[in-house]
Image (tube, rainbow, N blue to C red; front, side, top):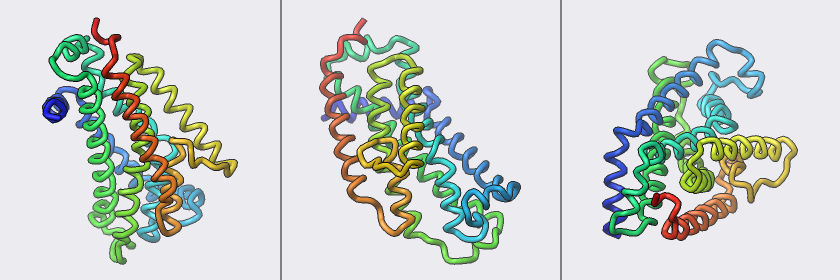
Length: 254
C-alpha cells in the first residue's frame, strides 16, 4: 500500500511535465467557450435540440451535454489515457520503473488513479464554467432558479458512467504502445454506441453507451442505477485483470 501512495505521488509530480493536466484544463475551457458561442450565433442549434438553449437552465445544460457526449467525451478519454503513458513510452522508462523493488501492478494502479482524478477534475471544471458563463454574460435565464440538484446528478452520473470506458481504454493503452489502437477502439465504440441509440437497442452492457444512458435517465428524473452498477462492476473487473497482467508483464522490461 505504501508503494501505491509513493507511485501516485510521483505521478502527480510528473503531471507538470506530461502536459496531460494542462491539456485537460485548456481543452475543457475551450469546449465551454465553443459551447457558449454556438447558441448565440446559430439558430439551427434550437432546431436540433427542439428547445432553446438560451431559454432556460435546463436547455443550456442539455445543450452542453448533448455536445460532449457523442464524440468529444470518448475521444477525450482516449487522449487522456494515451498522454498518461506517453512519457514512459517515449523515453523507454518502463525498464527503470519495472526494476524498482515494488510490485509492477502498483505502477498500473497509480497511473489509473491519476487519470481518473484528472478526468473528474476536468468534468467538474466543465460544470463550473457551464454555470459561470451565463452568470457573467447576464443571459436572461441566469436570473431564474438554478437546477443545482440536476447539475449534481449530472456531474456524479457522468463521472461514474465514464469509469468503465476509462478503465477499458487505459487497459488497452497500457499494454499496447501504439496510440492508433486505443484511438480505433474509441472511434469504433463511439460509432457502435450511436447506432445502438439510433436504432433504440439496449446498450446496458456496452461501455460506450453508458454515459448517454445515464444522462438521458437523469434528465427524466433519476440516474439509471442498473447501468451505473454494471459500469462499476465492469470497471472493477477490468482493473483487476489489468492489475494481474501488469504484475506479470515482461514486455516493458527490455
